[in-house]
Amino acid sequence: MLHDLTTLRSSAPDAPPRSATGTWSGIAGLVAAIAAVIALRWWQQPDYVRTLAVLAVVALAMVVVDLQVYRVHLNASSGLSAAPMRPLDVKRTLHKLVGLWLTVGAVAALYWLLPVYADSFYDPFKQAALYGLPALVLLSPVYVALVDRLQRQPEDAYAELGHLIACDRPRDWSMLVAHGRGWIVKGFFLPLMFVYTNNDLAALWAGSPLVRIDNFEHFFSFGIDFLYLVDVLFAVVAYTLTLRLTDSHMRSTEPTVSGWVVCLFCYPPFWSSVGVKYLAYDQDGAYWGRFLEPYPLLYGLWGSIILALVLVYAWATVSFGLRFSNLTNRGIITNGPYRLVKHPAYLCKNIGWWMISMPFLSTMGWTTALQSCLLLAGVNAVYWLRAVTEERHLAADPAYREYQAFIARHGLWARIRRSPPGSQTAA
Image (cartoon, rainbow, N blue to C red; front, top):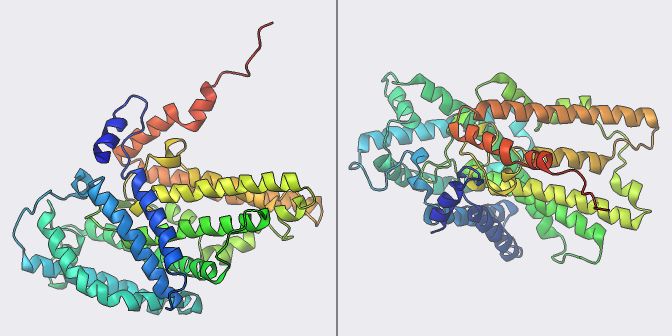
């Protein structure tokens, strides 16, 4: 029913193009996350186990909504039929399993090889990966066999890898190149986002279970921490479940070096080793609270705007459901804040950084203030470049071009331009 209503709304004159998933998927994941965090607070298990449990509950909630409400497995983009198209092909299934585990093994080998992953920072991810490995071993043959019977074109990248190991020349090398790029994205971001989620959950569970709404400073701190937790938690689920059955697989990956550079520049270890040194816009360490604390009303208003910006940022991630990802196209999202602007997360993050750091005010003098403003403008420029390269990549998808045209007609800036000038009162 909801699936049909979504389709009907997308055909209305002023409605956005149909989104790859609907609002209820993200809502279900958010409700499940809150319930799981509360229920597992006093569970006597290591933090990484409790984190895995929260992620599993959130993933299950969104998978159920996507399959049962939006029936995404029937989307043409999934490449699946509604019923099995063929009997079980044991040989091809084995080829795909070999391809899958060869891929996983190659990623694991890179984790072992690259010194950055020897850092204790990544220990929670390593522990969680080993803990969840038996489940992956048991479930992967069932999933691969099921999807193979449903696929319209069963000779996918995993099958091609299996052929390669069997000394058969792959029929499509470009498919393997795209497969490799997609797994590099997944292999880079999944450990990082998992550790962030694990650490944020551990801090939340270790703190007070009560949220003091009578103390704005406490409420602000809790709100910011919770919203950033929601962002990374949804990211972990999405990077994990790159599945054709939920139509959340990677359709394409950023093909240009420039796109990869401006994206990876914003994340550790690249940001911490390069960005922090060259674009350090907060040198005096003085933030908004220090400047506005003597003015309670302005303090509360300024902090509330920052919270609202971070809320939209988290809402943008939640709107992706199972499809959030950097550097890839996993379906075009047109609901939530994406109904108004093409890059709500980038927009709100960058405005928020100006409000949080207030670089135009400095305890070290006007020259440092000017320097900080220019450096933060440099960070903004990096995110502008990310938006440009992402749109260049996504524009290869007709669905994104349709979405671009919708935003040009009905987006926030189009509405502002169409707004009449200040109302005039008749004499």
